[in-house]
Amino acid sequence: MKKRRDIKHSDRDRWVKNWQTDWNKGKYNPFIRTEDVPSFGTKHRCKGIKSNRVHHFLSANEYSLFVNLEFNPGVISIYEQFPMLPLSMTKEIAKELKINHPRYTRTTTDIVLTTDFFIQLNNGEWEAYSVKPMKALEHDRTIQKQAIEKAYWELQGIKWHIVLDSQLKTTACMNLSLLRHYAESSVTNSVSIPSWIKIFQSEILEKKNRSTSEALEETSRRLKIDYKLSSSILFHCLWHRIIAVNLNIPIHLEKTPIDLGIVINA
Image (cartoon, rainbow, N blue to C red; front, side, top):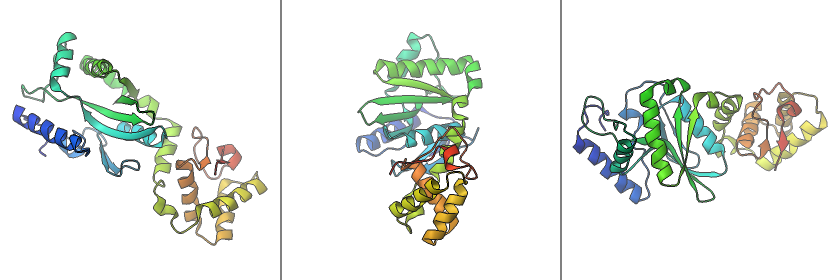
């Protein structure tokens, strides 16, 4: 797909038709992909753990919120760059709010607005999220666009949230970004998780004042596995909530399990 520049009505309408065809077939493609737009920040793509498809993020903040949504057991589906259709609805909202509907740069073609995340919860409800840096809200045009987005979802009875970058620059978010690298089962294929947990639990209970890394070293020795593998298993278990941890504390393994709030849930 060409970059979203010099867009004609026919371009936009073709994108909408193609997207709707895929959506109706149960296939999801984000309406805007990383290759569709110029880089103004840290764009990112990654394979989803819950969706098993490649997700597209236009900023580091979007990726950070995505990791939080993936970690949330109440979220079952995540759709990024979700189009707010039909276009006629956002145009009517803009008219009611006395706001000029956004257009593609240097064109008279109205944009299909998108929401950063549209998610489904395990209770059957849906929610929408917009991710914005705090400084962006200093601009009137950004505020106007957010007003259109908010009204669009509220008219459909769907909760809409705005998430600021300050809410994503936290210790918990940094911890989750670390743990997500170990979420896949491939990191634990060579070891029985229940056996590892049993030994690790005995180690942290036996000497409560030693560091987590020391407990991992002893667990590794007893199982005759590499320390790196043992730490990977720990992080895997933390991501999948098999073992609990205080996410508001940096996960530094030189700390004791008690200091990290480590609790075996299995």
